[in-house]
Length: 426
Image (cartoon, rainbow, N blue to C red; front, side, top):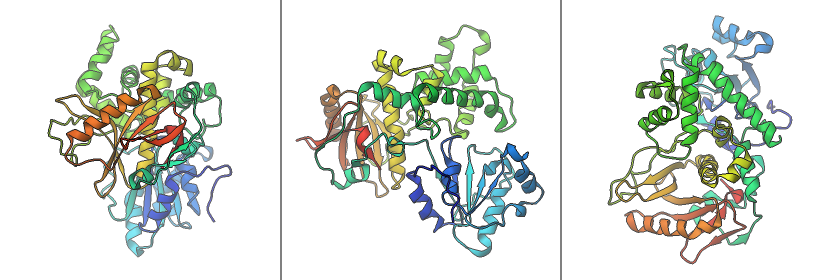
């Protein structure tokens, strides 16, 4: 009998966890703090060891440090929560999976990638690594799920009217974010939770992850730069310049090496989730860009850092557009990975032609998606997609425009789908 918590909301990743527990001896669920890893893991577990539990003075952690077997011999699947607190657990789990080849023995969860020499083996073939994110709009109940991303690949989408989400509500969904603790709160309550998340990162996590003392003020300046550059293709040099241009104090001057170190830490804390460039299968006849598009794991983080409220988004439609794109691409990543697809973006350096999102499935087929806040931008997006279609050798399986303000799912005469993000699911 699983240890499912009362009030648990099913997550898209649940199905993949079930499948992987039948294939691997153990799975490792990684992701940002507070995204729901523990509750989701408990939904599939019959026993648990909490290694970061302050309520019992870290009793389980101390037991594991004395003898790992004291926490690894319980009913399977056994959850080892925040396993990185005792990194040697990784190799111990790998060894136990080798002992009897039994499937689904352990579930490891972690909110940080440990920086340690205590892990000697990758766990390949024994431990399946899985990435978990905050809740998509479909998971939080803010998308009707009347259209499936997978069905777009299979051409099974039918024209229909759907409920339109108004601009103020879209602003609220962006600022609130997809944190499980926030979805039933007021926007102001959700903002307080996200701000406390950022404060914890700055006060503790940036140094605790590897024991290296880092300048809180400089990391905060970098976070502000990332928030200003949300959903853009910005090199490290751009971030350094952005920080320099927005402060005159000498103590805030940072080098490219410092920025690289801080970005690495933020990545290990699962605070940022960049969207890589797509260039391998399309075989464009022009020079294709390689830089990633920068995102926070959840758009609410950037809003908290810049103190953005729903009203501020309503008063600045350019910023609203960037953060709406971030919201959509967060959801597209979650939906795509549920059926072994990947999220990319596309940019041609020579012509400047861009496509907001490319979804590639395992067999190499892909879909091209433009994201627009208002339906008045539909024709501009369609024109862009057609230019893309004509410039590539390998044609997309489908093309789609995701709009914020739209009350229908339609396939245009030119074959391009148009739909609102609040009607999409995996």
